[in-house]
Length: 214
Ligand code: MD3
Ligand code: FE
Image (cartoon, rainbow, N blue to C red; front, side, top):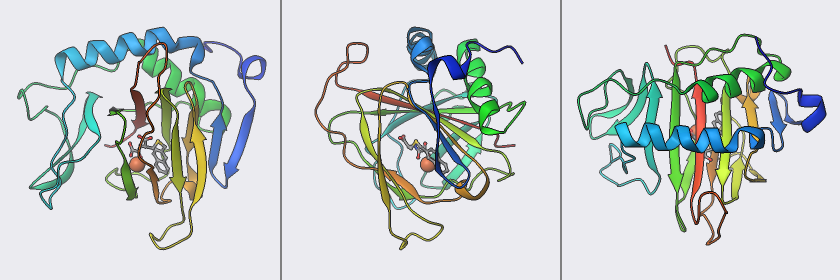
């Protein structure tokens, strides 16, 4: 797999916990291409605040690209091949996204990571994500690669049970985390986004999570 840049030259891989590796600033070299990609995807598949099965509107606005997308509505959570808002397939994963995901997964020990989903989430001041597990994917041996862009956020990660104590980690612009192995099913969430500003995104934070769902 082509390396976009040498990790050793640009960032230190920090183990966070068993199975999780933080690559501080890894996505900065591609920040403009990544945000252009977000704009292209959002133009075809607009961000929307999904309604949970319980009838609550999520504060995070989401969309997807790839052969599947994660959706959440009164019928439940699932991966779907079509955007329910348009009835069309999700846009393709932009080339810069796919390159970043596989280049980040490799030093974390996941060679040839080939995600079929990129879930894009937009946070504004006050947007939060309550503690949850990501378990709608078929194979938990496949990692999830997360990319943070724009305003920094306080990320929470706990254990395998919701009641386990949580640790906090600030995720800043360009940070990439690879969640695999025993970290893959840990509960996690995001505290309400603080009012802030980033030169490339204004008051917003974007998070992309790359997954192999099928
Ligand atoms: C740990 N996103 O999209 S990124 C999500 O900042 C999600 O928007 C958060 O949780 C965000 O599902 C957190 C870090 C992250 C993403 C996926 C994980 C941590 C994870 C999956 C398993 C374990
Ligand atoms: Fe998650």
